[in-house]
Length: 138
Image 1: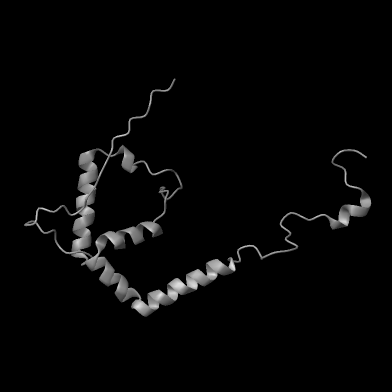
Image 2: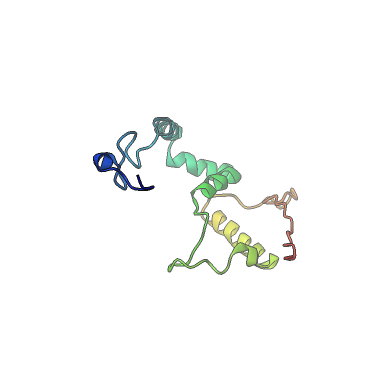
């Protein structure tokens, strides 16, 4: 018998592309995943739903922003699908500071956070940054 040739009597038993003879249908969530999502949804509703999220946004903006970060796309692109040219890594420190200040001001205007407490000397955001310089290609 030649390698890669299926004998005639076994040809009807072969799977066709896209066939799933056993298991879950494609796209069906795992039962545990579905039950966890239901539990989270029920807890969200019990805590007050949207009004609870507004409360968290006003009282604990760090936690609220962490939640928002889970919803944002990890890769940004232009409308035509090409990579976004103004990646954050390509911004100068001054440009990044200006964008951050605008975002904070927008959040304050929207009522998502109060104005910074200037008297305490505490920073609005505690940020630790490290400059990473790519190694020269060998």
